[in-house]
Amino acid sequence: MIVLICAAAAHAFRPYARSNEAKTSWMSVYALKTGQDYYMEVSADGSVLTRAETKGSIITRRGKIRAQLAKDFFREIESSDIITAQGGRESKLVFYKGETLKISAYVSGELRRINAPLDNFGEAFSYAFNEVKKAAEQLAAEKQIKGFLLAEPIEGMDLERYQANASKAGGSRAIETYDIQKAPTLLKAIKQPHRLIPLESDAEMKDIQNFISTHGLYGLMKLFYLPSTRGTFKCQVLDASKKR
Image 1 (cartoon, rainbow, N blue to C red):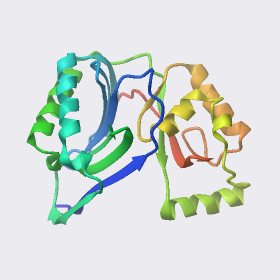
Image 2 (cartoon, rainbow, N blue to C red):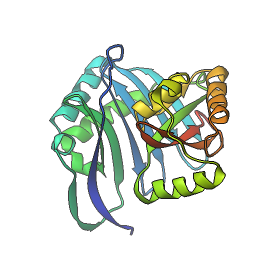
Image 3 (cartoon, one colour):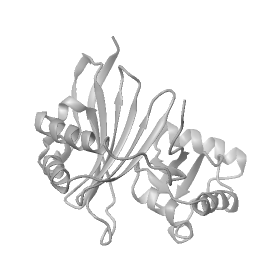
Image 4 (spheres, rainbow, N blue to C red):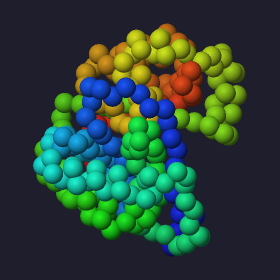
């Protein structure tokens, strides 16, 4: 058995204008027993995107499920105590081998990130989640996406380690949002941390590579760091598909 401290860690991020985008939540589930990492995002209109990763393969699916399933799921998100609570909750030391859920959702206009065992979200939430997941698994595999861009904020020791390494490599000056706007996909990624932003074309991949080179960012195409006026982010370009 694996011993873990099961904690519900909550982090909040600045809201931003979402006038042209449907209400969306994104999440990842990690199964300790199987080692499977499963990402899913759901929009209120029924749009769904998933990325399932195992040791030997990656499969991305994208499409629409019944809007009622999405509506039911958002109702459970909005009524979940663990998501709407003002602060994180900590449980006692336990032997835990189940699934861990990390979910980003908007609560009163604030983007909130919760990390806790899936069981902690309640039976009704788990049921709604699994209904959406089962419907999403019926969608055809997505072949058009070139990859994904993922941005995760770093702080504490991780931030100090990055700053030390970046300084040796030539500096870590914060880049203004105005400059990041020239790479729209990158801007969206840091405004929506932990979300997989689809890279739909080779041109978008090239834009990221050019941005890294132009600003002398620490890292490489697949893994680099972005110091900005919104914070410092670890950015990764992930595969959309992979076969054994």
